[in-house]
Every structure is written in structure tokens, then in C-alpha cells.
Length: 215
Image 1 (cartoon, rainbow, N blue to C red):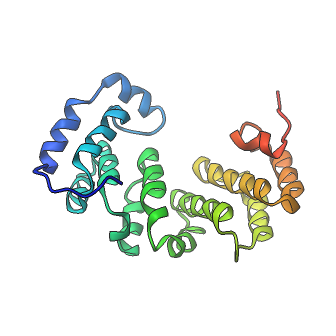
Image 2 (image 1 turned 180 degrees about the vertical axis):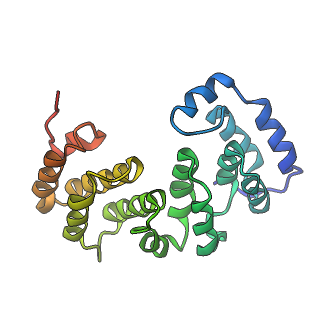
């Protein structure tokens, strides 16, 4: 997040600026991935750099429900200022893939409530929410694995990843790859699961797990 500053920026003014940056061709490309906006992300980041951190303005932008405004909101917020309840609500009202990705990576991972939310979201019946729980779990596998039941996670992945909805499946893929990469003693089992389920064959981390390339 950028440094805090006092400016005369308003939500209405920023919304107008974002609307002026709308590119129909970019929108068409983004909509193929489920992202309903046409603003160049480099230009959006430049606006965030100018505006800097402004929590209340961030909240106003988020409340518009507009995807580009929400992406800007996530770049100018204070992640530690949100309560766990606020973060849970925000996740559930933001299924757009890019918003969800930035929300988890730029906000939740920097929140003091990250572990509490990881546990709450991990087995949620909403696959988008559960995918966010798995994304936070992958973060823990890499950075703070102490206390995680890694064999138990492999059990869940083995039983449920194959039939999981796409976004949840991708998040479970990542956890499987990270378990194998970070834990040599579990690598053979992670490899076996990946080979049998054939979900990891096109995954970017497959080479690190020495997974075969399937033609």
C-alpha cells in the first residue's frame, strides 16, 4: 500500500476518471476471464499511487460495487483497519476473479485476522470462499507450516480436488504443489496424487515437482 496522504480526491471524481479509462476491447478480453471491467491495470495502479492510502475513500469506492472501483479501493486501503467480520462480508460480496485475487493477496494476507479467516473459510460451502481459505492455507504451507496437518490436507485434496469447481480446484492444486515443493518427505505422495488425478499436469509448478508433461 502507498503511504498515507491528505488529498482532495473524491469517490465520484475517481469513478469518473476510471470511466474515462474504460476500453471496450480490454473489457471484452477481461470478461472472458469473468472480470467485468475495461480499465488498464497499469493506469489503475498509477491512480492508486497518486491517491495513496485513504481508508475512508477506499470504503466509499468499495461500496459502489463497480469492479474497477473495487480494484482501486484495494490498492488504497489499510488492510489492518478491517475487522474479521468486514473482511468476511467483503469476500462474500466480491466473486469477480480479479477482485477476489487482489482482496486475498493484498488485504487479507496482511490482516491480523488472516489465520482466523483461513480456518473459517477453508471448508465453506461456497467454493469461492473455500478457494480463498485454500489460498491462505498455501501461504501458510510456505511461510508458517507449523501446526498444519499436511498429510490431512493431502487426504482432503485426494478425495475432493478432482470434482471441485474450477477456482476451488485451482486453489487446491496450488496447495498440493506447495506441499510437495516445500516438504521432500511428502513429495512422492503429492506427485502420486497429481499423476492419478491429472489435475496438475498443466500447472506452472509441475516442473518443480518433476511431474510428467502429458501430451
